[in-house]
Image (cartoon, rainbow over all chains, first blue to last red; front, side, top):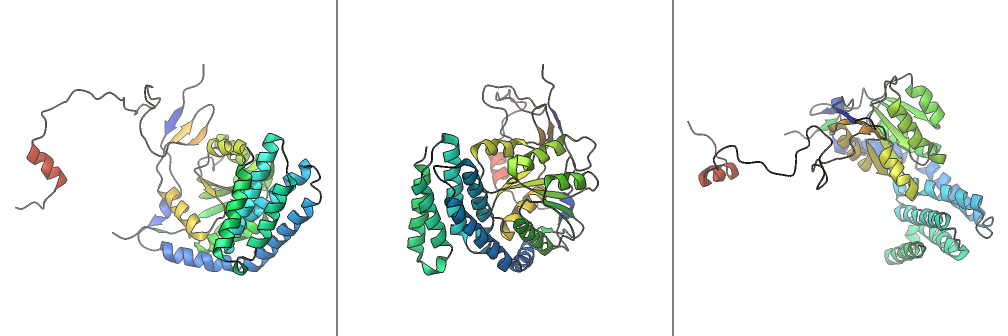
Length: 153
Length: 195
């Protein structure tokens, strides 16, 4: 017979950080954090571009769906998911998320389509420079990538 | 009433991220929030060693560490009875999560799961939420961590609740006379008492 679950109240150490005087207001804290994050914009974007280049290089190793290359591509794309939206490249991050989901579905279903990967790579390349494309075009690209991914059951 | 603020000047925070780039962004963010005691780890092994010796007010743990090591770290910590951080608030941060990992995120014992990308407004908002939460702690064979039910709607229909304070679905008999209409109106429309 399984042991009964125990429920009890506990002290939340973060509770003492909520104050009405002193500390930082939400507005000030967020502004200060944004200024700090801005300091790492350049190295982050350089790292992001290295990730995009690595994804392009991994494409050449995919063959008929090489498992190790796909997994590496997933990890690189997931890193872009994490940082794209921090520096105004939210749609690039969403395209990378779609690529992760596509690979995840390939892995789960034992399927592979190079064309589906390629269209994502084209999308990533386009969304890396959002200012060079109008909003409608970018939205359509992203929507198309999501449809491609959703088509893999 | 004054808007609540966060004073994180004395808080200690452990950041566990596999990616140095993400770790830098998060570190900068918490410095901006006013945190002075930040400890950064790029591996679960480092995090395990640090968390065994130093108490933290908050831990931010990455889901995307290979092989699900981030989930396992949280799960082990919650069950480590001798560890001072066993009850520490944990924010789990996830990029893309494969279906198999969604349940792991829910069940490992973290207080909150936040989707990447992490931006200052999102993290501040979640921090404030975590600082004000008052859920109970649960220890069961299959789960140790804060109660996963964020709202208490009572036990599922047709089932008896497992908690001592769960209320049954059946409403009991009245314990006094019904309120008069003017008493109900007074509840809806309170007025200042006049001497």
